[in-house]
Structure formats: structure tokens, C-alpha cells
View 1 (cartoon, rainbow, N blue to C red):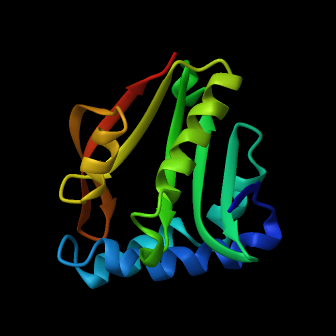
View 2 (cartoon, helix red, strand yellow):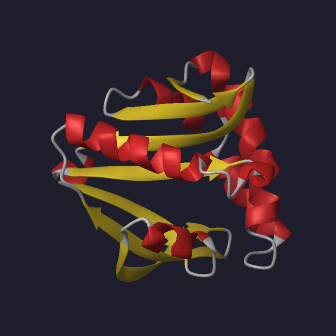
View 3 (cartoon, one colour):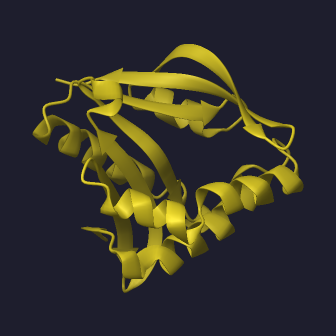
Length: 165
């Protein structure tokens, strides 16, 4: 398995992983209509392209034998603080439990340190099983946040933080 920075030509691969992962990850948590709305809003070509080309952000792909298995999108200096924000971290359902999520988290932490940040920061749906994954890897729930994302939909999240040395 290898990690590499995404380029604009990788947008279809990122969208494919998101389209495969989201309906399974959020089944029973949010409606299929909200899943579709959020995918269209957050994983359209423009949004992904902006993240890939933003100098403060990095979009990492995890690959094995030429297949993209997951991705992690991070932003350094988030909110003008010593924080690296994990905006996105998804891996294909069939790879969950393989250590790939841990590899991406470890890489985000390494990149955070290299960029002089002392904390990792992310949002996760309160009902998502990933809450336990993040807690297992040193994140703590800092607070709860309900974000209105339009069309009558909200994101009902925990904001989680991990201090890094």
C-alpha cells in the first residue's frame, strides 16, 4: 500500500471512493436523499479541485496494486491556529479493519507535525461508528455541533481533537 498526493486528474477516483463509501457508512444514520445531497455538495469536481489546489490543503490517496482504496483531505493552519483539520477520511468498506484508516491518520499526524501544528481536528457524525475509531486513536470529543447545510438537512456531529507532540 502506498500514499500519494492527489492531482486534479484523480478527481474521478476520489468521487468513486466517496460514492461507494457514503451510502454504506451513513446507512441508517441519514436519509439516502441527504447522502445524495451531501455527496453532490461536497464531492463535486469543483469542490475536490479546490481542495487539491489549495496551498494550505493536502489530499492524500491510499493505493494498492493501482487501485485507490481511500483518501484523506487535510488543511494545515486551520482557523489560523496550530491545527491540522481532517476534512475527509474515507476508505472503501471492504478495506475497513485492515489498518488503512490508521495509516491515513498516522500520515495526517506526520504532516501536521511537519507543518508545525500541535493538534488534529475533525467533525464526525455522532452516530457514525468512526467515533470509536477516532477515540481508539487518541481523539477526544471536544464538543457537539449541529450545522445547517441547507435543504432542511443538518450535520449532527461531534468535534474531536487530538493533541500531538
